[in-house]
Image (tube, rainbow, N blue to C red):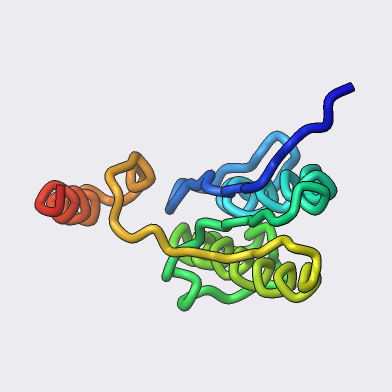
Amino acid sequence: HKKRKLHILINNAGVMRCPKMYTQQGIELQFGVNHIGHFLLRNLLLDTLKDCAPSRIVNVSSSAHKRGKIKFDDLNNEKTYEPGEAYAQSKLANILFTKELANKLKGTGVTVNAVHPGIVRTEITRYMGIYQNFLGRLAVDTLY
């Protein structure tokens, strides 16, 4: 059978500041979508990426990671939930994961990077308040 080729994996799924919700697996939605999903997909594809090197993994994160704290005692945000904090935690997890993975994959031909996408016209702000959403859309409309 034919060998599969894969030279780039871009982890770009994201949800931001949503009400408290959980994935089907019981993981807080922002952490599940923004981080755990990327982690799982990377695990499933890593051998192929190594076999096809040179290749790269790009994790789309956010500058919000700077406000993030990993709540090891409440990783799933069951005790307290604040949408902005949960988002920042998921994006900090992206950054920490990227740094560790880059170190582990040194010398394999697989490059790993995290990027902040900047302001982009998407529906990611749909759960933000009317005022914040309006200002965000105004900025995007001005730029585009």
